Image (cartoon, rainbow over all chains, first blue to last red; front, side, top):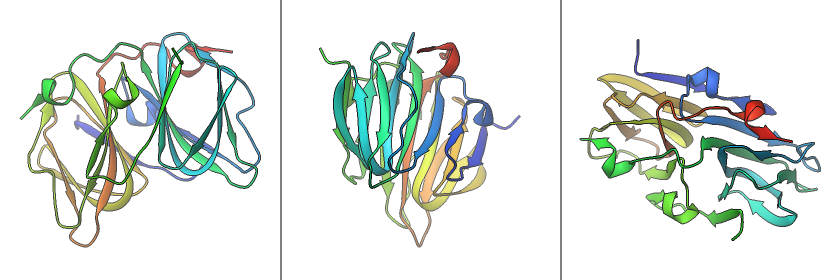
Length: 116
Length: 116
């Protein structure tokens, strides 16, 4: 079996990569919210920290009732227990990547995990 | 302490997020290779699977001696033991995100990890 898998992503409302890439350490979604829309619910997590990368556009993350303005180039780490909800701005769609990983699961990384 | 942290990323050659975002389940880097350049070494990993997202431009990933063309919108999962090296194309820079997570570390995700 090959040691890699590749997919090309279209600009869908939501694309989930776990099953498409056979991921074992993360779930990753690519999300597009049209201008003036939002994720329709607030959520938190049991074990997973979430890392968000804003790819295009701008909007607002509401995190534990705090409004955090976000725009392309911003990255956020959100703790599992935080209550979160994402909104596109009224004028602009927002495209963002959401990476779920189990909190405290990383051991070595980069130099301490690499084999050269 | 706040349940989130945010940073805004410039187009540097390489930005590493683990320490800047206090990540505990991943290391994430944003990388920019100018046209005609490459990462100067081949590497593999002990425990970590790597997920690559091509953000801009195009190039080639050499994975276990196989040449894999990559362009903006492509995502790859590479197993820890695979030997890998990334090249920008001769004509175009390539910007990519690299996500390191410990293989087999994810337990529940999305519906099975969410609290609504």
